Length: 290
Image (tube, rainbow, N blue to C red; front, side, top):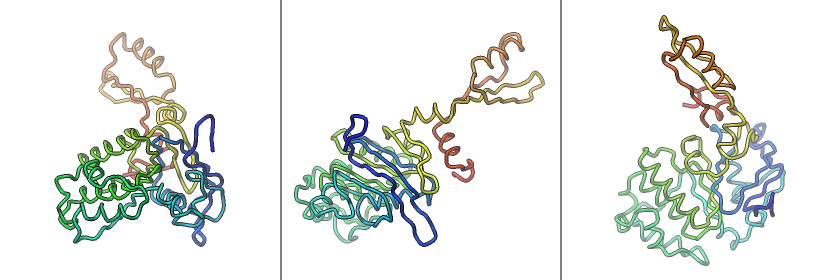
């Protein structure tokens, strides 16, 4: 399928899923272009993981049309499944096997797997290839999870909160890996609630709240559309701090300059970040987000 001249790896229309009285996904429309890194952002319970499970064919939907790599996941064949890789939040591999044994074992499940040694190198585990999984650190285990997600050479890689629990260094190392995979032509769907991660990786994103997409587009476009006001802050002559939100910050600064007769004490002008936009769209406060 295509949309606005782009071939879509994922095309979703009117997706719905309920669990008893709880509506997890409430009419989502989604189009992910081949070869892009697409972010699905939202707070816990927004419906992100349920959507990913449906796209992979691991969960039935109640309504809607879904096409993933040209097929309906609900009736996807084994050959189709081999084209979709996934990395869940809580993967677990046999603790007694080594990294090399595990990657080679999983490679046997696919008709055209990538070379296991190449994949181990790709995720930066060459030095740990002979180590048992139980001896790996948390970050190294997460790298192994990614290796198992890509060993089949997927056209589409689904990453569900891939860096949860990572320290900053490990997070940035995994970002480099995701960029490398995307550079090789893999389409990546990334769910996350880390705004810094989304800004660093995605070409486009959708913000999900209460099972619905409330905004979609490039990060810069979303900042411009939903965060047009800047904050101008300064200090009064008696030292009292002041701040004003305005859609015309240059005019505000000019007016302050005239009032102060030149230099404005403590002047700062800050544009809304993607986090500001995200919190506004999801109805969260800074404290709730933390």
